[in-house]
Structures are given as C-alpha cells and as structure tokens.
Length: 188
Image (cartoon, rainbow, N blue to C red; front, top):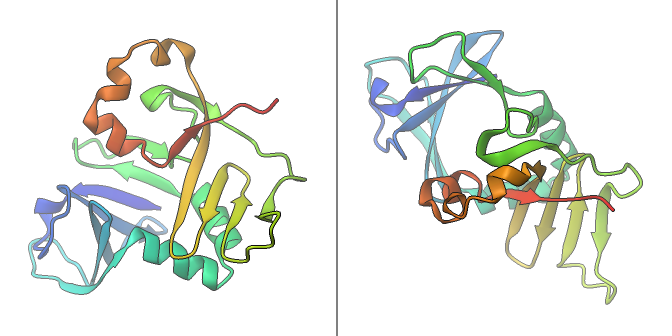
C-alpha cells in the first residue's frame, strides 16, 4: 500500500511535483518515500515528518523499467501492482482510498474498466526478424514495448465514450501527464 501526501510535509531535497508517495506495509510507514519529477524518481529512506531525510537515489523511470526487465521481474511487478492500493491523504480525508491505475474502475479521466488481455496472448513476443533487442510483453492489463535502450509500459483501459467526446480532455496538459502511460484498447 502507498499513501500520497503533499511533499511539503517532509524535508526533502526534491519535492518533485508537490506529491510524496509514502510506501507502507500493514498500514505503517516504512520510512521509504519517493517523489516524481518528470521522468526522474527520487527515493528517500528513514523519512519522518518535519525531519531532514536522506536521499537514497535518483533514477529515471526508463532505467527502473530496464532493470526490472533485465532481472526478469516483470511478472512480479505486475502482480504486486495489481494488489497495491493508494490512499490519498492530501485532502485530509484518511478514508479516501482508491486502488491503483490497474483497477481502472473509478472512471477517472474517462476510463471505464481495464482490458483483460487473454492468457494466450500474455508473455513476451519477439519481432519476426528475430531482433532480440525489441520485444513486446503483454501482462494481464498491460502492454510493454522494450527497444534497444528503453522500455515503455502502457496500462490498458476501456474508455467511456462520453468522456472522449470532449476535445478539452485530450488537450488538457494535466490530464495528458496523468495518463501518459495509459492506452485505450478494445479486444476484437
């Protein structure tokens, strides 16, 4: 589980986009917090409220994805993500809980449920020319393209047709940033 807090709650050297993600287990903080600043993830350890914290590392999202893929841990990460929950405490409502983007049933930004990739399609697929540097991996609700030096994972959702009719939803920069790793999909 993770708890979303305003990053100003902690004394962090990089507050990211104003949001701190506190990793918890059994409802208790583990002192592990991360912030996101564009493509960079800043990881802090031994974090306590109103105390200066030690930055453990800064790593790009693509470097994280490459490491997971190199270690063959994609399935483990997908399984953990499917069970993860996020509690947003920025509004002060300790009861406001929402599952991660993998659930896709909260209709936020027009999503109306996840796409369930058929089990026979799940796994890693290689290009027809046997280019080992380029693969496509389907998870239960994800599509990951891995090229020579990068990897991109897209969460697959069904889209609410009414939400899609409003062109402003596609041009809003905040929505674009929040949904940049989402894909609208249909299984035929």
